[in-house]
Image (cartoon, rainbow, N blue to C red):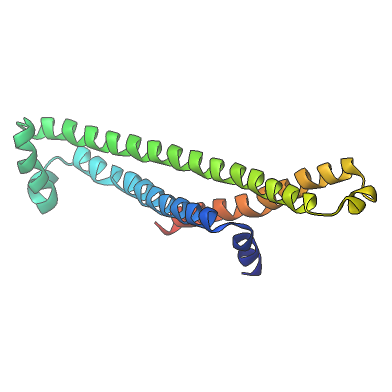
Length: 169
């Protein structure tokens, strides 16, 4: 937990809000992914036994409701159900790609933000301090330290939360 506190401490309040928004997207992504996978089983069950449409209350209600959309018989309903499952899985994958994009964008922007704050910190020192420092080492340490913190701390933390959310869902 202390590493988590340190990582959150490195973030500005605005970045903490962005992290919270990202975590909400990750939770929604996990739920959509679980629902997408779970929607395959009823479809396969109806494919193997079309009489389930008449026996199961939920499927029967969906069948009766889908008649308003032009579904006439069980075969049309199977096609309709297959299209619904297909579009649900595609929407789930699309949302996962959007979430992954925002996740990568957030992580890379944190590397920039931490580097920028380190530069500001170094620039606040007096001129005499710079006389005793090697400027190439300063530049190298700014870039490498920010990269280490982000890619060895923040990014694995966000990936861990995303995978944990998927497992829980």
